[in-house]
Structure formats: C-alpha cells, structure tokens
Image (tube, rainbow, N blue to C red; front, side, top):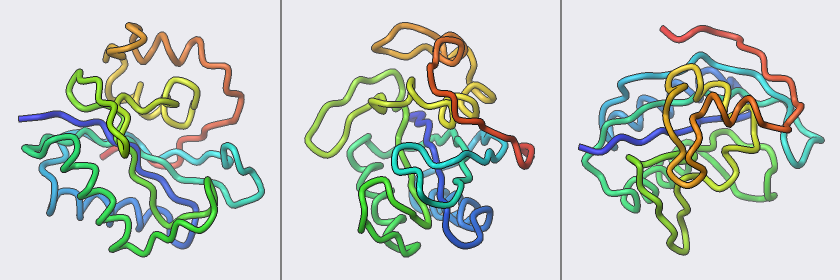
Length: 163
C-alpha cells in the first residue's frame, strides 16, 4: 500500500464544497483518505490578481502507482470542471501530489516531491499540521524545518479545523 500526500485547493465558487467533492472523488477512485488538515485561506501565489484560495492537505492510502494516481487526479479535476486557461489562474480545483511514499519521481508529466512545496507556506502549513516530522526525500529536512526556513510571506489563515 502506498501513501501519498496531496494538496487540494481552489478559488472559484463554493471553495469548501469543491474541496469536499474532490476528497470524495479521490476516495471513490484512488483509495482511502486517512488524514486531512484543516482548511486554510491564502492569497493567490504567483498570479495575484484573483480571489483567495482555500487549501487542504490529504493523506491518501492507495494501491495506485504515482503515475496512475496523477492520471486519476487529472481526470477528477476535469470531471469537476477544471479548465486550464491561464497558468496559475483561477480554478475550481487543483490537486497536487506532494509526496508519494519517500519516492523521487521525475517523468515528463510528474515530479515528486512537488518541486515548489518547500517555497509555499500555503502548502507547508497544512502539511505540518498532519505530518510535521515527515522528511523531504530530496532536501532531507522535516516539514517543520522547511516551514521555519520558508521565505514566503503570504499570510495563511485557518478557516476550519480538521474533523
């Protein structure tokens, strides 16, 4: 059984409902979600002229390979209505694979660990909530250590607690 940490997020429509729908579809198509962080609100990162994002980290137990999980996640995003019109633009849902076991994956359509997770507080804060001692397999630092060193200054606000 594989363990994958995923970041879900979106900034269009009923953001909380879309995060819940994404989690439900992942359980139906990918495996069992064993942990989830609180939901956090963050200003857009990169392309900033858009609505704030809601983000949540999920821990998924799955029998899928990393590549199959990525293909399934892309199908879920499409099924939920995601349109890839503008890079880093507004979106109903975005699902990123942060970690897959302790593997390092570099294929044309997938890089694990996620190449920017250590640069983004909106990823590190919810990840630290459920896996503070997880060690990044490339940087060899815990999530807590990465968060302490993160230069990102965007505020990240908890809006609901994990249940």
